Every structure is written in structure tokens, then in C-alpha cells.
Amino acid sequence: MAETTGSVHDSLARRQRVLPKYRDSMDERALSCYDLIMRKISDVIQLSASDLVGHLNCSHLTELDLNVVSGTLKKPHVWDPLLEILRERGHLHEREFVEHLRNQGLNTVLINGVDITDEAVSLTRKAMEKGSDVIIQAALRHERWSGRADILRRVEKPSDLGTWSYEIVDTKLARETKAGSVLQLCLYADLLDKAQGSAPEFVYIVAPWSNFEPQQFRYADYAAYLRKAKAAIEQATLDDAPPAHYPEPKEHCEICRWRERCETKRREDDHLCLVAGISKNQRSELQENGIKTAIALAAMPVPMPWKPQRGSPLAYEKVLGLKIEVRHRQPEGHRMSPWKDTTSTCAPRNVA
Image 1 (tube, rainbow, N blue to C red):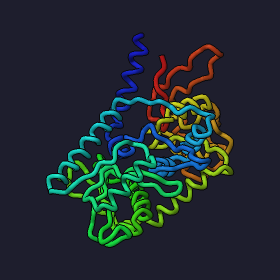
Image 2 (image 1 turned 180 degrees about the horizontal axis):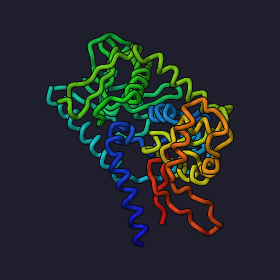
Image 3 (image 1 turned 90 degrees about the horizontal axis):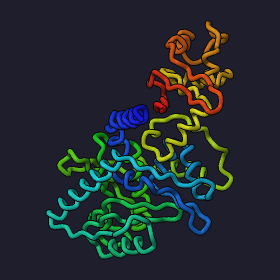
Image 4 (image 1 turned 90 degrees about the vertical axis):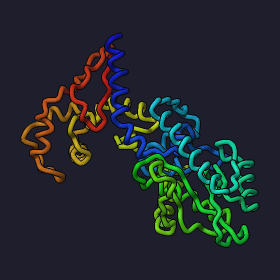
């Protein structure tokens, strides 16, 4: 029992160390969509901003979500208390910003729910046609893409709606705006363009420390990259999509719903990322030369039998010289001993 408790404490400690990373890499919109993934409607896979950003971070994530859509995998149910805290902070920040807008005398319309239903899209459209000052949780959809924007704010720029149109405003928790957040807003801007017949000139992000002064990003500056990113995941979700990718460790793993599954796979495969201090370039070099597991690396002769294309032989020998306890394979029924060094790129948790 003591060992199990220690493992839980170690896991919580690791999560607390990466809490700032959670806050900076997952805005409240991504948090609120944490359990939502792509779905199939009328034999067409519908995609969202979280799918778009997720694919940019990890193509294997897209493949796993596709397996859920096809019914070959079950959607993982993940509950993380730190993520729940951030989720609530995000909702609070959004409510405070909405109250700030109301205090300016602006009328607001709330689109209830979280899904992108026909009713939600229709109510959003009616609010836009009416010319409401602020539309909260606007539901936007066009062809395969859909999303819920925190705020649509009216601007006096002509569109198909009349003498007015709308721009996107989203509330974020991150201290620094990440590329994924801007890309998410650009997707909403693209959907908004289809809805009102005019692309918004800017998208805006409101951070908690900003006294509700938004950061401004010109949509046209990012539109080409958005088109490229959309095309990539659209291709990856076709029936004839390329074969599966291996779950290589990435920064996104810390906030991914599939992290436990991928970590288990890497441990089962004795993946090189389990070696403390090894870099991605070193892993690629070793794999190209037939060394694909930690056990194989431990058996590699020194000096190296080839001249590496990435880095110096000394750097590889340094990895071997760390004298980390490589987990020897045990007979069936025995647990593998935990590593003593947790600086590997996908360091396994302690085991009971």
C-alpha cells in the first residue's frame, strides 16, 4: 500500500510541475472540448478546432480518434483534477469578460449547449441577422468543419447581413498566446466568413492579466497556414488515409486524453525514449542503424560501430555512460523494476 500511495504522489507531483505548461498550452475552449472528438454524420467525418490543433501536434492522435469513430476503440474517459481547475478558471474568465461587455451597455445573446447542433447553428444565424451586439458561444458550421466561438462581437463593416458584420473574440488562460490558439480562432474566422459572406479583418484574444484589453491578430496573415493545416487533417481522415504512425513522445502528450495508452505502448516496445537524456535526433539516428530498443542500446559496443550523421559519437557514448538502470526483461508474472532517472523523454511512472 505504501508503494502504491507513493506512486500516486509521484504522479500528482509530476502533474503539478507541468501545470504552467497546461495553462499555457490549453486554453479554456480546448479544456471544455477535452472529452469531445471528431464524429461521423451522414458518412462524413465532422472536424473541429480541437481536431485541427490536435493533428498538428500529433498525427497518431488523429488515428486514435478515427478508431473511436469507426467503433474499433472506446473513447478514453480521463479525469484530471488540475485540468478541471483550469477548466473552471477558463469559464470564470469568460463570464467576467461577458460581464465587462454588458457593463458597456452591449446587448448579449447566449447560445445554450456545447454541441454544434442544427438548432444551435440556426439560433446563432438568427442572432447575427438580428444584429445583436454580442453573441456568446456562437455555433458555426460549414461542410466538414464546426466550432463554438466564445464571443462574436458586432462591428460596423458591411456583409451579407447588412451594414454590420462580426469578429471573433476568445478568452484564453495562457500567459503567452500559442500558435494553436491563433489557428483555432482563424478556423472560427473562416467559418464566420462562410456565415456572413465577409471575412473578419482581425481575431482577438483576451487574457486574464490584460484588463480585458484584447490582443489583435490579422486573419489574412494566417489564412494560408490555416488552409494548409485544414488540408492535412482532411486528407488524414479520408478512407484511404496513410498507414498508422507510431506514438512518438511529444509535448502534447502531457495534455492528451490518449497519453496512458501511448505510454503503455512505448513501455511494451522498450522504446528508446525510455533512455534518460536521449534526444529525438539521437533516437532517429539509432533507429536508422537498427538499434530500436533500450535493451539494444545497452548492448551497443563502444566506440560506436558507425559515424553518426546527427551529433558526435561522444554524445551517444555519454548517453550510454549515464549508468541508468536499464529495465531487464523479466519472466512472465514479474514486474519490471522502475528506472532511477526520470529525465527521459517519456519517463515511465513508478510501479507498485
